[in-house]
Image 1 (cartoon, helix red, strand yellow):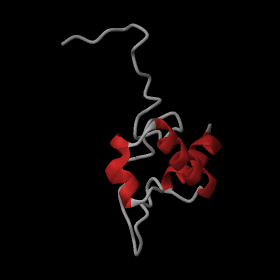
Image 2: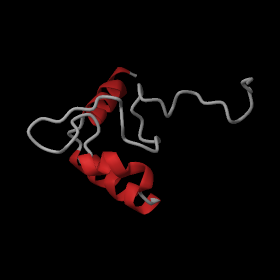
Image 3: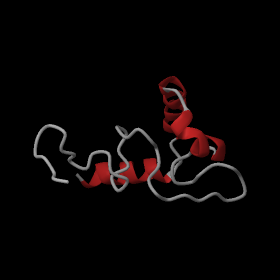
Length: 86
């Protein structure tokens, strides 16, 4: 398999390490819950994490809206930190 340098090349914008808001999934690879069913990494419920691949785009958008409004997940803390650095 060869890699192409065309427009399908990814620039890392959707990588877990950046935690950008253009990713399909809010996951940043830090899956942890303490005392409740909310992932501290992405802000989703365990049900949302487990069923994400089965969600419609409308359902995903609804989850994204809620976790952005809450803004307490590590995903958003990392974004704020990255924004201050650049």
